Length: 312
Image (tube, rainbow, N blue to C red; front, side, top):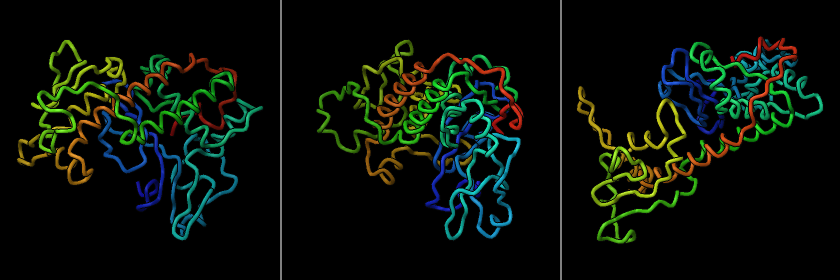
């Protein structure tokens, strides 16, 4: 990770996919910070937008005419794009990778960022995941070119839009669910009224209602929000599981989401608002995914020097 996030303030983005042997199906996420590599089943494989090298090493290793056989660069190669006093930032997408797509869409002006977000959009395609389900369980994703340039741009824009949603999930608008607060009005609730131990469904057969705690029940949750699945589970159910109070059996260590809400986020209602925001993210994500075009792959393109466009 030092070549991806070398120090605080060095911004980057990376596409994270499930590793080999995952049994819950293929998943993809994007991150702008260091992650727990075990956040995805079988471990996460990460592919960055940028790679950083210390300048003392970068000067000796940069090759201006680098034409690797990979789509995404390794830390020791790829052309330089930007530097500061300590680090040189290089593109994660190789020169060869960009050329591959430029050949496919010769009338278009493409950048490496366009390709990066095309990959993120493509990996969300239900058609792609269904068609290559067997391969995705055994090897890293292969990134084909779609036939039409117009489809390339749809996938690339979708990837950008999905990235903004997924990276900024904490700042999107809260979905306007109905909050049943009993005898109190919402503006009368104090910090202690937002304390959550474990969210649960009021009825296992009806996921439109979630009991947040003894004071708050969340109603009118759109069922479509549960269609956005990450790592084998709806994103909303991950929020329900993680925004809770749990005790590690062996160590006795207590993990209390309420402490994070108050001490870090300065908002006792953070778990509730996060749930509402993830509803928004889930609905918008599925809207983008469902609007993606059918996967129509170009089969007559020269794949060298990309080695069949493998994402490594």
